[in-house]
Image (cartoon, rainbow, N blue to C red; front, side, top):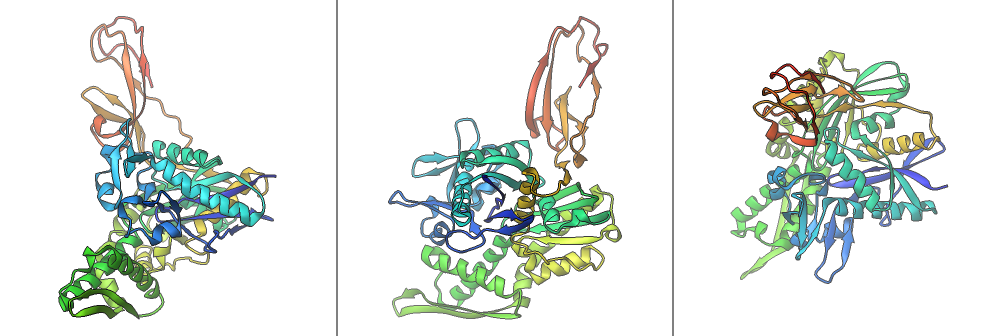
Length: 468
């Protein structure tokens, strides 16, 4: 029988897991690592690298290395101004206005790049399991819109996988903690990864997981903390030696690797040593970087980043109409939640509740996806997942205004009806433009579809009743 797996397709790293005997477990990749960087590179020799190999040469081959494909998947070129500046590869407009990566004159869709990461995960897992992996449950952030979910599903198909279901990351995390088995509880899922931040409030109990509200920041994560350390190290080095390390790609690659290592170490110790011999050279000979970084300094240079988590948490709590006292549990997801300052912030926002990190934050989403794959294959007892629509749905009305019919954070499937009428006398047809988004102007929201209602009998405006 073909194996069904759960895949956490992350912005920075991805993980694959499988359910065996009703219990989920992570499958290591060919390099023996439990997480695989979501990075794809095309070398000048025409070689294609995926995962850790691609990440290792990222700064030496900036234009040929594609990172953070998840930020672009299912999005149009005009929607991604800020994302374009955050990646080293060239992002251009595709033939149909979608975002494309341009590598040495060849264009790649974000779905193709994500498919290469999925393909590596599935191939490595297949070797480990001794049988081909053909079916998968893939997770997406709760705020992903319809186009982004479809594009993620397409990436799975391109990778040769049958995508059994796309589920929300916080829902998967709750499944991994086995919270669906508990009595009714309100759970806050705090997900701070390498590139994105999501927060969700769930109602859980009696084998039902219901997402009450979701919020987040698509441009906040552990990578930003790494960048702050790199800037600090480069500034100090320039002050002492008069050489700007950020100008040389090999030195910058080493700085980023050292910064990430220092950040990880500062989660367990209060001071870490950074030693990079032969980082650069000038007329007087080679230069070495030897310094120490205190946890207090790290917290000081990243304080504003961590404070940016507050807004989304408060917004989700107000949308779900809950206070800190109503929250029974806090689940931490994503490697960046190991940062002590992040844990202190969560305690502050939830009335002093200790966050639960008993399942590895890097792996919890993939484990939950594997449980859902087991449910769909009949290997695990069924769980009902009730998700919400992350953005409001509505139609365009007179004056180019978006009239909301289904508000954001409504449990789906949902059914709403509104009655509209004609704008002019003897109007014989109306165009119904279905939109997704929160903006007042219809033009600022995403178009999901359009249809035309014709053969309306002639009548004064405002008389015909059109039910949408």
